[in-house]
Length: 544
Ligand SMILES: [Zn+2]
Image (cartoon, rainbow, N blue to C red; front, side, top):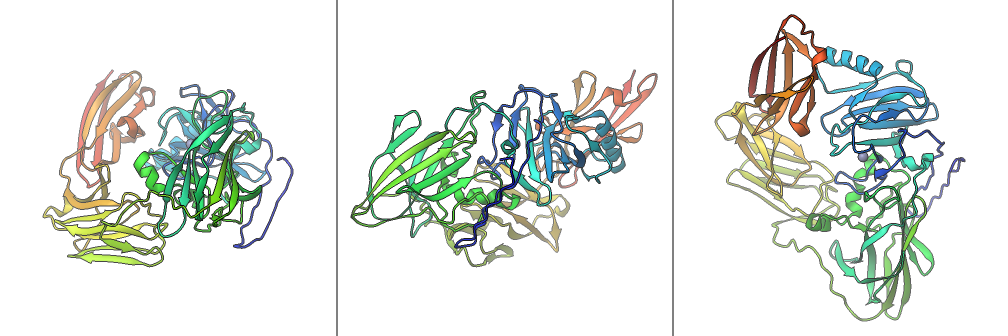
């Protein structure tokens, strides 16, 4: 993999297969690399754009730059990557280290100055190439659990700098012992035709450690295959995603998906290849090894669709091959016999839903001042939706479709307390969240990718602030029952003071050492504002 090789084929619908040249790099940690997540695996927000490296189950593991370069970006966010550092290397790659607990002392100082300047813990700063020079193996920070991380680990990415294109970090030569082939948890047959996602589970029998034989399929028509599979490595029990999916028909490759790289705008293509209805029903990710929409994407390594046409009297041998990055393989053999038989298939019956949305047309709904605008290609296929505006609640429902584009909604503002009113969103599980409070000419206008129920509600309850007892820290629990915390500020003797915020614990905190306390009385003023603007202030005196 170390040599330059670019393979370019221009075929049918101009799919370009290209392999980006990579070079070896140092590991980002000094401990053995064990993965709790791998590149391209199926996640709730789309394909995973990096690898998740285990950090001994704790925070504070030294994180090192994989190569010489410069810090090109630092971001601190409350969700997503949390505290993250981006290092751009002269060889054309940028490495990204996320969910950190803190940066190294020099970077901490620089970032704190920016935070005080902006009076904000949250920050997103880009740097020029001569500002923070980094050498290979420099400690750039310490592992943590910040942002949308639910357990200490390092989310690590390597991107091609010019196109901001995530590349499978394993291609950079990190040794990970792996002799375990991907596991197969289910094989599915899809009937291509009138309805999307017509599927049927296929019986399979294990015939050796990594080989399966399916029942003989007797049918005719056009079909595709889908699998549920996982992969893990020898030194960790974490269940990760499969690297490569191949479909072979009578010895010839019909379709292939491989996660060497993809682009960020292909991240949600996962929802096109994953059976979304199955995911909603079972919370399990079933991936289709065929390209019914003839999508052109970097992770698709085939110009064919993988759709198998079976005529009467045909005899077709199919092999589904799942492999990991170390080339361990699991093989499933399927025999197709073309007969007059017609098999039964499951499909999502959505005929009770009152509106039909043609995938390739714009759609709009309006009633009593409520308006919904759905752009063409918002959904992957033609679909039905339940849409009504009833008792001041807008229903926009079909739990089994994924919206690839934002839907425009406008709703009348009817309640009297205009200042404290907002649009509440209720999802399929009944969870209520804040959608918007932007209100122009007595109409709420907003965009959303979420289907569910929307109604206008009032939040007149101020947030709560509670002082917490933490060793060597000043700490407060901040909560808001209705819409949530929008903003927090802490003033020490009248001056804005930097407090970190960990929304997962509803906690804001700072080190006691950051405050000059000796021989003085310290006045703390904590101000919390919720999403509609209700404020709460807590004043606390500290005497030492
Ligand atoms: Zn990750």
